[in-house]
Image (cartoon, rainbow, N blue to C red; front, side, top):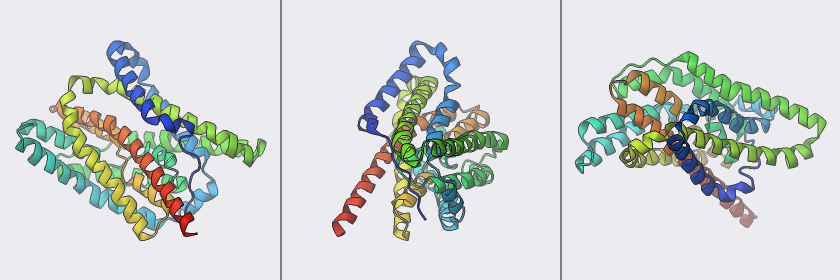
Length: 347
């Protein structure tokens, strides 16, 4: 089954790289020059995330969502990759960089390397349950399937996250179920409800043609602007970590980028090999790739207070992940274009 979303990044996509760069610069400048604005901007992340996810939900046909509930094989594949493969993959990559390469070159001492390795593991053990829907939608993946996968990931990681942290970091950390529940409500329940109501009202009053040709393109722009707004807010709130510890970025970028690219490409091409089309394979790929950095930061702050670099490394994580995921969106759309061209040539 497949229900590709339509649209994407609209005409603004052509200058996406420029907007991202400007968003990062503006965010860093706000946090440095006028840090008092952060007291107000801290409320911007949930607002920005809501308006990033809401446009994707408007595109969802509830009948397609019901059909997606039958996607047992897809759910099983994502669960296997997320909980039987990815935690060990991030551990191995961390071992490679923070136990062999960087210390071997004399670039990191043992204590710093261990803290960054722990932060990398925290970022890697739990899949994303918020922004992953945005990446899926921007890459024109299967929206209904994405909602089902996100729901299952939300449930499974409550059990697996403490177990993997205890196994890989040798520290027991209970997961705050209430906080996860709030995230699910805010980033899945409310946008889905608002999207379903918007879709029903607009289709009834304006019709399907106006909905597809007028509303959806505008919502594509709203989604991109909300993403850029969220990017500015995140860099304003957390940019001090980069400015205070610029050298740590050099150590976190290689293992995290390698991890993200391996996750996406291995899950995408495995899905294609099994027989899924672009829409489903892209959805599976992003739901195996996006990381729950909110959970990672919360655990680092509460459970590793005696090792501040662990928290610093987890904060650096999303600042690296967001631009990389946007790059994967563009790569995915390019793959879709090439795939469509090859099909036309065969015909």
